[in-house]
Length: 77
Image (cartoon, rainbow, N blue to C red; front, side):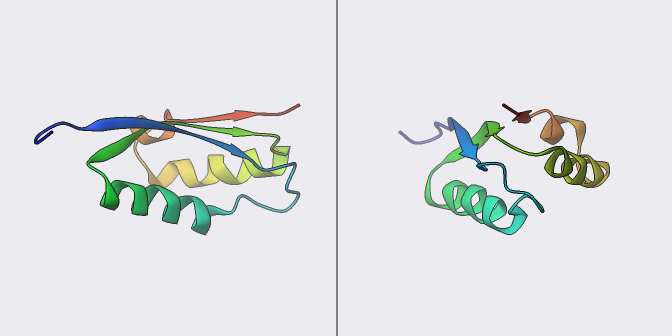
């Protein structure tokens, strides 16, 4: 439908990835989905992440808007 924007949610299981978030992969997923469809990210749920992964994300948040930061939710076991 012309002029209609879809909002989508991602659930990403990091399976306790120890060193870092796969930021390049996450950016590519969001970017390509946005290009292919008339849509935008509403929320991204990242589960089974480590404290270090959350720490890295919080360092990145100083470079993005609060609105964007609020779209990401982290969950541990």
